[in-house]
Image (cartoon, rainbow, N blue to C red; front, side, top):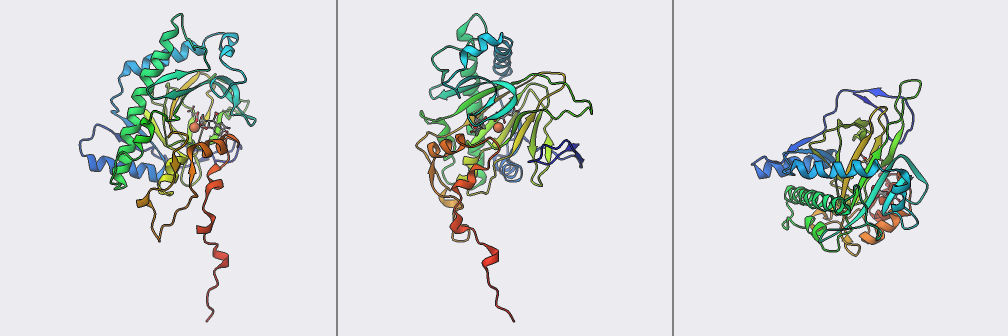
Length: 343
Ligand SMILES: C=C1C[C@]23C[C@@]1(O)CC[C@H]2[C@@]12CC[C@H](O)[C@@](C)(C(=O)O1)[C@H]2[C@@H]3C(=O)O
Ligand SMILES: O=C(O)CCC(=O)C(=O)O
Ligand SMILES: [Fe+2]
């Protein structure tokens, strides 16, 4: 397996032993074993793949078809859905509002519960039937939200939290600020050294609670390993990948860590990925849960609302470690200041 270091845009690569991506079979009947496995994957990688997830194939196929049809439209038509009211709607190359760029085009959609798709008052269409696109997104997001909730309930069980709905309730809230994003990465030819180093979507962590990602059968996603190397994630269009976001890191007082990831472009085939970003309502407090804090394990973060965090995140650049802004510095012991008695 070929990996390179995060935070470096260098084309140098290192070879390491194959690093397995944790895969979790959600049809496992032993519930406590399942919650242990989910927790372990969230603690060790902040990332895993789920199989036997129960989402019907046609729900995925329909969303894929609508996405493909949308991105196949002429640029002039797609651009009708972009404009000053971004971030919601169509975007090309610009990521966020602070100058980040990537080799992709995308649709960013605000999702509400009960689900309806808000796309800046214009109806996004992929075909002659405007309703088809929003029906496909509604059906798909409903299914992946359920999957995210099931996983979050397993996380709560694994952490022995008495209220197993403590995280999933936030995603089901009628005011949940969850988003859906469809990224389309056109192929970019390899450079003369045969190294494909075009960054489609630069390295970052997702700010929300949990991300559910699915892509077509074209590779490109890479995650940062605990020892700081980039691990390519083999694509699997039938399955879903789960990523811990910053908000879940805070609520578990750093026991789970949000995963740094990025997407590279393919030199031959277009890649399309779809992400559901499960988030709480803007006025929800993001604080470590009581049973994650103790005198030995004080809170690592200052209290903040999801709205405050989102505002901070969206005012920074993609690759910034925005949680630093909310760290409880009082609790960090500066080992240089510890005076040890001399003999
Ligand atoms: C540069 C940025 C893009 C982003 C908002 C931000 O200021 C920092 C976080 C970025 C991110 C990453 C995960 C999701 O793709 C996203 C929609 C999100 O919630 O946070 C994007 C934001 C974006 O593309 O607007
Ligand atoms: O397209 C991908 O595989 C990853 C995209 C991503 O990380 C994001 O949109 O936040
Ligand atoms: Fe992401």
